[in-house]
Length: 465
Image 1 (cartoon, rainbow, N blue to C red):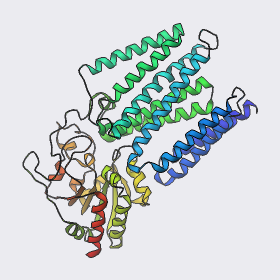
Image 2: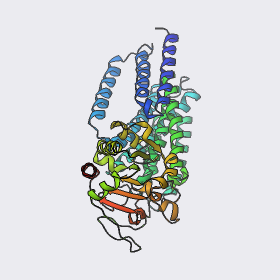
Image 3: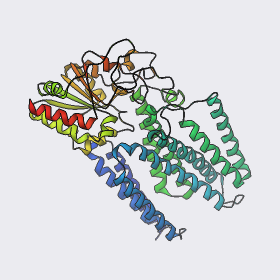
Image 4: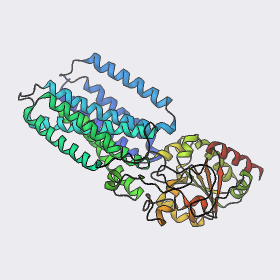
């Protein structure tokens, strides 16, 4: 097949990828966006077999078979609560693949020959550095989300100095690799980049993992685009650029959602010195206040006679797999004439869009989902807010406590509602590691239970009213 037809196929694939990414921006079109992007990728892969320089068809088919098997098993077996970890891991695999291709191409192109020209060398070095950082950084992010590594920031004396020295070492190794074209230097380059990737993510707290995952995703996209230049593959260039651009924009939006500059997120060791607070069980706060609890029957009566109820989902909802139960309670309240809405914070859960995915799985109507900016003005006119497993995103300390690690982060203003119900297993702190004054607010009642069990008990209570 002529190169012209292959390029036309790559152009079609690129258009499908762009359309697919565009449709991912809204829950209504996200499913079709995934399919459109998948078709585009299938076209790109299929026509790559027609490239004249390729002759290792067996290896390519074996790689596709292994990747397909892992992808299908992962998609079906991984629980919804583990999706953020899987995203982090798959993102890292993309960066690692870019780094391996860069090292392979460097050795294949006979260093010192005219085939390894300046432009090609730049692409190889960029892929090696950024791909290695993304791979190892994503592994640390996976470890934090999977709780294999502590979610707290891991810091040590002169850490920023060490990172700066590693950065200088990378610059020196890039120069040595480019001037000597000796294979040993690119291997050392990947090793130093790997260490920098690990040390880059370790001091970032668990509450900032959604931002870190977005940033590493952007890095993987850029590494893939550079790999496209190395391999002279148009589809890979366009696909990598799309991932890099969308990941960068998402990182900026996530930073704004948390009210924190990106530099502070990456270098501020967020959560390194959390405020003291109640760790487990029911007990008093630091200023002597105590929480109020209520029975499911009392809360059920409150919900049944409310005019408007707003549900605020959080990571606890995902852990309990209670999205269908919250939908069932909402439908019951709607049958009684209650105006039901869902308030979605941009960083609720452990990855961007985590709550949207959960609620979409339970077929929650899209017009009942409200972003933070839309729903915050509505809380003063809301009779009851039901917080299901959320913590940091509803913490008033972000507005009123300048010394708090989350101060300045935009939150859902649930404390402005008439009544607040918090469903939580204990008074344990959230990912940010700080106590939540909302729990001790006189208008707040706590229902200590697993989210799924609590919602089922509330359904029974509302039915009995």
